[in-house]
Length: 380
Image (cartoon, rainbow, N blue to C red; front, side, top):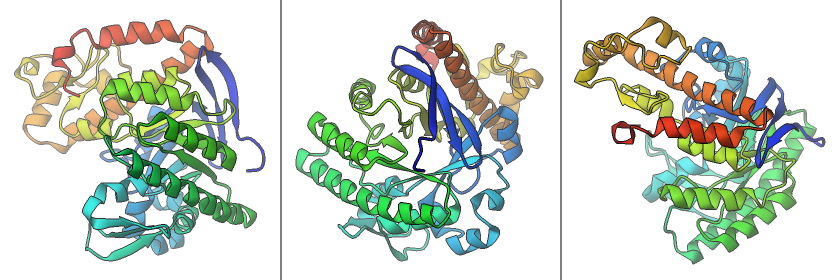
């Protein structure tokens, strides 16, 4: 990882397209990554993800560490072999999951002490251990352990979280460098924190840049703040990051958020939303989101989205999908999740093309104008 592994090809204002060169193949950016928290993208098989065209997915260190355990995955030969996925895998360090445990965790300088949500057992995750676990998983991209603070955190606590995250980054990079020397091929990303204070954001970005990791993630967004605040702080933070490094924003999965991120030069993003909402019959269309359970779809034999080229829209009607939902057939979750992931993958693919043809701003405006024209009916 001494040499840059990210190549920029085209730009349309701040939006840009490029290639990530990773151990399990190249990844075209910007890229949306499906979330496979437990080593599986819910309701889809790895073959489905390959069929759609995904080159990278996300899994979670916290969950895989607790179950099935790193010993199981190590004996399987790594996470790729364990889950039969030949593409790339990015793993979250587990920091956000520990953050969400609230009363079950305590942040110390040593690391994050927490109790398992599964059986209540006690654990401590240090920045070194997070790197070691992700190395066992054989992650193509791994994240440093960080301290995420919620929306409306007071300045002092946000500053303390930033300082701990910075110290943890130094320790994480040292351990990661040792693993690379031993033959590990995955990249490490630093994470920018600072909550919603611009001076803290700038300080954190400067420290992340100084660490000189292969990529940088923008953390602490999409944690309950209004969209306008998200957009403001995303734009501000992205402007502080070096052009030559890939930028990753965690936890965004709607067209509005994705297109706004791309417009600010973000290269990577992920979210559970397309599969989580798919499992309850909520699906994307180019004219906004719809709920398949609505009675208006009972005799609607059109596809979910007439402009979508996925196999769900080619073969099944809204009426049939509603029938599956009302009868609680698992096929509804499978097909809806497949369609939603295809929809976002296609949106990002079209965004890349628009960037390459220097028309992204016009593309974004036209897409969102149609997508939001029936805003009252959007349920996603």
